Image (cartoon, rainbow, N blue to C red):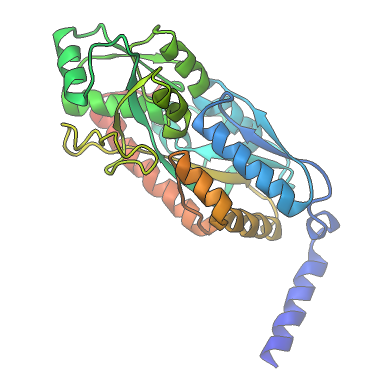
Length: 320
């Protein structure tokens, strides 16, 4: 009896939905990546887009919209029609930007609907081979010997790589100069050219260049070592106790997207993140798959926002 009642209730709910939600998806889906190609957000986004397309039977196109500390891309997604055909590859800046900017063109809590956290990823302190520092301690010593002259790049103002550097400045008591770029890809290009001394890209972004000897990895930003680069110590164990900064990526939709569409996308994203081929590839790239329910992802964003608010205040960074 209960089973029959549940089935009837489900059918009634589906019947009440707009036809577009019942038949979803019937056309190409756009996944907005608020950073340039080649960065960790882009790499993870493309893996998810390709597998999601296979599962849904519709093309999922990655739309890179870099700039303004990821604000441009996030705003585009937040203001898109809530029909399931525009998604956002969100990242840590969703929790960082509210404390970094006095006014944002979107509200990350009110304007976006979390679908699932995707991966957790360490950033990594890298230096150009010409920099005479082979360990975190040597880098700190160099920075203290030349205050205000050592530059470090990031994916942009208020991004996770930026705050990874700011946290190091506070805990190690050093004066290094931030140089923001429009995405990790551009910051890495500048780093490879030796235009900036240091950088804090995500591990997936940095791995090919570290293994090729074009960049030197000094320490990862998470409390533990990365499975993809076990030879590189964490910054905490390399001489800065208490240091920890985790970058994360997840999928969201514009607020108001029908719950059945959110649930369908969550089901497929969780399934693909747990599949052996995707899981192995993500781990090899230096990220840890971390699928969640929409509610768990919403709670995580809230906790991360509270954490980074405290870090930003401790670093003395003023909202712009």
